[in-house]
Length: 329
Ligand code: TRP
Image (spheres, rainbow, N blue to C red):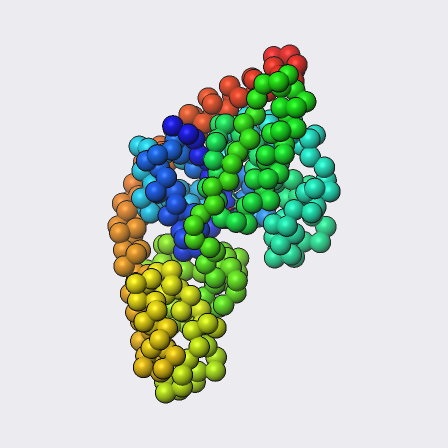
C-alpha cells in the first residue's frame, strides 16, 4: 500500500472548507492507502505562538473533527507533531538545503503573512515549509492529499528531497520525493463572499456547529446585493449562497439558479434549503462527535498510539539520514 500523509494546524476547530477541500478526500482514500494524519501543533505555533492553550485544546478538537467525518482509527494513524522528535531533527538538516529567498518568494507564505499582518517574518514562520517537508518525509509518504494552496510547499519539499539525495545519496534515494494529490473540489468561499473560508476570517461554518448555528450563519450569508425585494430578479453569479448550492446541493443547483433568475424563489427559502442540506451532511458527523466528546480517553489513546507508531518510523528514517550524511551514530 502506498502511504499518504496530510494534516492540519491545531489552531481551532475545522470547518466546511476543510471538509470540502481535504477531509472528504481523506475518508475516501483511507481504504486504499496507509494513511497518516498529522496534528500539526508545532506548525500551529508559527502563527499562534502567543496562544499555546488554544493549540493545546485544539489537538483534541482537530482529532475529533477528523474522526467525526468518518476517518477510522483502526485504519489510519493519527499523531501529534510535537511528539515526533525526528521531525525536528530532519527540519534542521533540511534547513541547510533551502535558500531564504526561495522561502520569501513562496506565494502561500506571502498570502498568509499578509493575512496575519506580518511584515518582519519570524524565522519559524518563514521556515515552516522546511518543517512541513520533515512532516512528509519522516514517514516516507508517497502522496500528500491537500488543497491547491499547499502546492508551493510540496514543490519545495520535492526540491529538498532531490537536493538531499543528490548530495548524500550516492546514487540511492534516501528521502522519497512526495507527490501532491490535489482534491477535486476547489476551495470553498467564505459566507461573507471572501474568496476563502478561514478560521481567522470569521466567515466559517464549523463541523462542530449545531443545527441552529448553521441555519443562523446561512441566513446571514451574502447574496446578490441588488436583489432587494422578492420580486427582483437575482443574479446567482454574484451570490455566495448559489456557490454553496453547487457544492452541497448539486442536484438542484441549476434549478435553483433558474428560479433565482426569474424571481420564483426568494433568498429566505433558498437559504432554508441550503441550511437543511448542510445540516443533513453534518448530522451523522454530529453523532460520531458526540461519541468521541464523551470518550476523550479513547481519543487520547488514539493519538498516543499513533504517535508511538510514527516515532518508530521516524527514528529509522533519521538513522538512515545520519548514516547517509556520515554523521556518526
Ligand atoms: N500547512 C498545512 C495547512 O495549513 C498543514 C500541514 C502541516 C500539512 N504539515 C503538513 C499538510 C504536511 C500536509 C502535509 O493546512
